[in-house]
Length: 163
Ligand code: GDP
Ligand code: MG
Image (cartoon, rainbow, N blue to C red; front, side, top):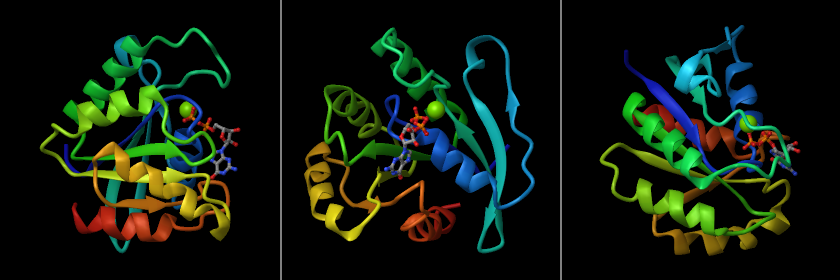
């Protein structure tokens, strides 16, 4: 196994929307796996001639309240173990939440490349709002809109450079 990209982050930041956008580039087989990994989707993508697999973590229903932080921690740990690169998605509409900080604290210690994507930057007026995410201590980030696709090319350029 190689070239595996895991998309992590708290619920509702737009992980699945990003996943769908990435795997749409090619007729991807999305597969649910039972057991511990039942909430994960796997797909295939390519960019700049490089192929990679994408894992969408945390298939929780939108707006569900019974999401335990422990479950998200587990998803993140699993993603770290089985991927080569991690895309950490946060949400500019909500700003930094305690759960984002918790995930960032885990990711800061990881030796693998972590790319932070500030999602829902649907227009340039939201670019400044993204600045607060420097406070998560992960350095540079990519502003993206998973819905309209803006910024995702730059994210993919950076990602495929690390494959
Ligand atoms: P997940 O729980 O992290 O997988 O998040 P989802 O992909 O299910 O998205 C959660 C909500 O955010 C949905 O209503 C999406 O339509 C919305 N969303 C996702 N990406 C964007 C985006 O780039 N811009 C905006 N405005 N909304 C988004
Ligand atoms: Mg999802």
